[in-house]
Length: 108
Length: 108
DNA sequence: ACCTTATATAAGCGAATACTTATATTGTAA
DNA sequence: TTACAATATAAGTATTCGCTTATATAAGGT
Image (cartoon, rainbow over all chains, first blue to last red; front, side, top):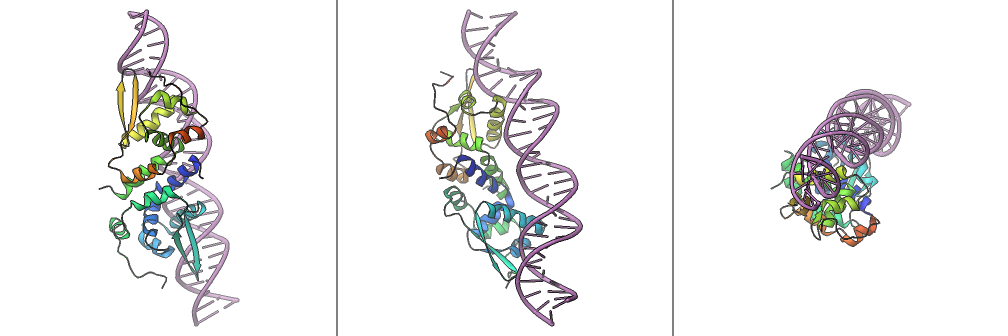
């Protein structure tokens, strides 16, 4: 059972357009850091810092494969986040909003 | 149709425990500012500023009655917020978490 | 008119946020 | 080992945030 403060702190992380887009994308499948670096118009360290915040709250899970790191959604025990993400547009719409198309992932 | 940024900006407002509690309380009925002043352990101007932010994003609606101002929820056209609030505990639990009991409202 | 009550606004301040550049770490491959 | 690619961390900075105190506005009662 989460406290009000915990829930607010989780939601605070969704209050940033980059992290919100990341989570909406992660709804569909797991993504490699290198893909996020291609998609978002911010530096690689900025990407890394966003993912660290999400991971530190247990909202995403990381899995290393060789030199690549893949992130996946981990909101099974977070109904508030599940509910929001359910209302988010699909990956295609998100990428369109970011003016990006899905390319062959860098980590193949 | 809301942009990603708009949705993130809405969610950012839920990322504060005071505003999140206010909205959870407003799910049940409308509340007078004076009640919020009693419930939350912050100054009256702080309450007023939180409500102004929520109003400026169209998340709540105000209605003046004499010298009192009542706020009500206005999230019909905001499915993301509706979805989160649906998962929030009821007023009783919120008040319990704040160590407050519902008293006779100041504005009767 | 005056005083009181309810609410809003203004100004200021310390803490948190999201970014940047520079550097460290880790893994792969020659 | 050396070099390179992917990712993370550190440090610095400008902006935003949430609070406070002080003051303004507005409505009600006498």
